[in-house]
Length: 358
Image (cartoon, rainbow, N blue to C red):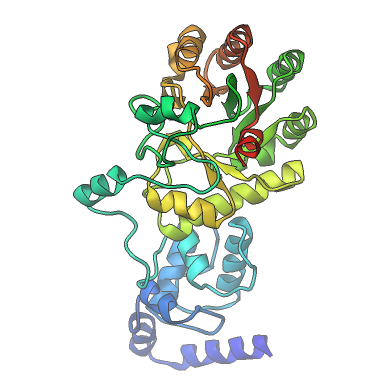
């Protein structure tokens, strides 16, 4: 039946004068307005469909000619996009599909706030349930369990050092960003085992898809895996639907790699705002930052400096982060591990730290 409907629509369009055909393709709502009302579907036509076709083509999904007619090629391109973005595959270009392609339906607020509003937004504290990160001023109180549970907003590391209260005088969490090459990872896992240490590895969804065997080795060794988003990009300026997809796709990719969904989310590059933290929690992940001042952008500082910075911030409840993808990252991680052991610290996974608190 669908093929007959498509042939009838095509015959009607061919029978129209050129001016009438152009009118059909030029009149009607825009894509953002159209999908705010209903999903575009097979047989639809107009400028919203033409805009959808242009968007699909820009994103690498071939809809055929950009003619403003939602035909079989456009439907196939929509289905390909839905599969690529991990959406329900139904061939309908609705709010989630169009949002994943980068267009925000009119009913959704604009993707970014003006600079002044954004600065005010980021200055507000972020409260996270479960795992909580604290302002540097609260770190000493956190070690005694006296901090208030309000996170430092904006960027982790540097001036916004954070810590987390834990049970026990010398317990800290050791966390890593990304994965080194397989050989270096195997060496790191051996050293962690020798020290009886457990850690949390944060990876992107892309990494999870490409390094499933290595992530399974991480889990088999008793370590946890958390999310850095799907691509590891700053998500604050993404449209809300696109940011949610980054979170959701990362969770799906990690679950496929290790057999269970991650429960921890670390904002890529340590950059976040209230909305992103709230969204992560809605997607089933608890946000957490880190304590030491050297962050992912400082990986070029060298393993000695990375390790020294980390060990200077070591205290009960500290969350230490080492970027394994930086030059000398594994060397820095081993130096931190040795330093923590020498100082008498028990190194735990973040989920174990959280269990100690509850």
